[in-house]
Length: 200
Image (cartoon, rainbow, N blue to C red; front, side, top):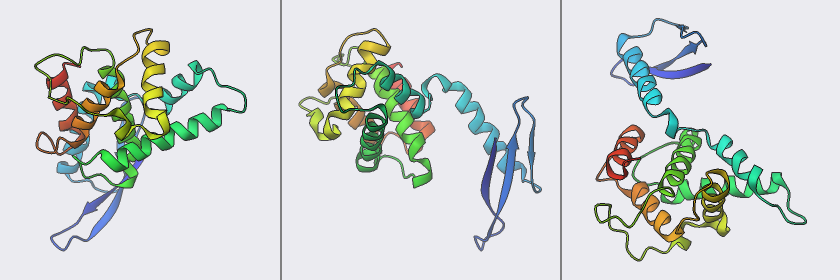
């Protein structure tokens, strides 16, 4: 895996790109001299990824699981269902994920996080008194053409062999998480907040 990172050179905010290559055997190399601070940040992020990897299933994999269990009617295709669901999650993140400033290149990561968190929320009792108050939230506010609710219902019942979730409850807590800017301001802090608040 190779990634390019813009590296500030001085106080004038001039930057250059450093290519960092990760090999399967754990060996790393970079195209230029890389400051220790940048390497520390990279390895710190890798440690976080390893800590939360069970919550970081790529959205494309979750989508394939969902499409695989869907019973598509006449005229529906897997490609169309995939596109519609992908578009719904993209709109969900673009329109409601306001707690973190992210750029377009990070949207797939945000979609994966929200999908993974939503799947975990479907597995717990969301009426517990110690959870954030979301009474009266209408799930339709974040349900794009029914694709978000259908994704979580199909995933919970057909992929996870669980019970059909109360989408208003799931949506209310997802909305709370996506807008809780007073609780966190980075994606890794969001994962910690969700873990501590929901014990998932």
